[in-house]
Image 1 (cartoon, rainbow, N blue to C red):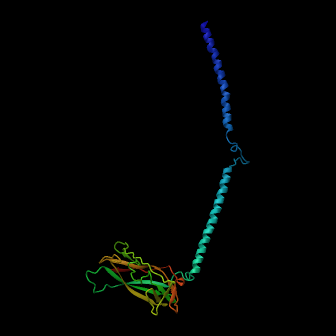
Image 2: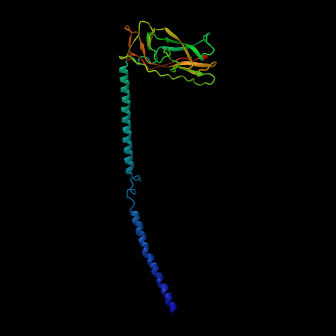
Image 3: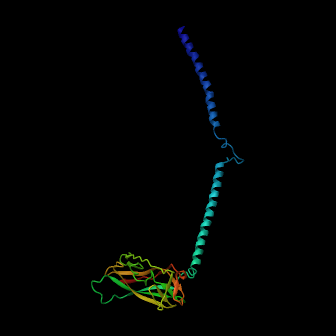
Length: 266
C-alpha cells in the first residue's frame, strides 16, 4: 500500500509539471510579440514599387545639392577676385602686357685666359656677354640683377656646371638691396650707359667682358665647365625719353632671360 501511494504521488506530479510548462509557453509567445512590436513601422511600409521610403536619404541628397551650390558660388567669387586683381595690375602698369617676350637676346662667348696670369692666381675664366636689341625700337634697361651689373658672378646670375660631374658649381649667393629713387624715376645721362641704366638702340648690341672665378664662384683650376646667364629683367622701357627720365610705373618688368651655354676651361 505504501508503494502504491508513492507511485500515485509520482504520477500526480507529472501532470502538474506539464501544466506548468504549458502555462509558461504562452508567456514566451507574448514576449516575442512584444519584441516584434518594438520594430519601427516605417521599415515595413512600402510604396507601389515595393521599395521602402528612406526619409534620411532625402535629407542627405538635399544637403549634398546645397553644398555643391555653395562650392559653385565660392568658385565664381574666387575667379572674379583674380580677374579684378589682374585688371588692377594692368591699369597700374599700362605697358606690362605690350609684349610677351622682350626683343633682347643674351649671348656668351668664351675668352682666352690672359697670358700674364701668375701661377698662384685663383682659378677663373672669362666670357664676353652681349645684349642685342632685336626689335625696331630703342630699349632702356635697368642693369640691376643683369649680367652687366657689378658683382653678377657672386649673385648667381651666371650658372656654372662641372662638365665632368654634371653638377652645379656653388656661388656666393650674394644678395643686394638696391635703393629706388624717391619718386621711382631713374635718370639716364647724356651717355648711353650710367650706373643704373643702359640704352640699346634698335638692331644694336652692347658687350662686356666678365671674369668668373673663385671666390665668387668655386671653380677649380684645370677643369672644364659650361656657363650660361639666366635671370629676369627688373625693368625695361620701350622707347627713348627726350628728358632722359624713366619712371618705374612705365616700365616692363619681370621678364625672363637666358643665354645658351658655352664651354670654358680654367
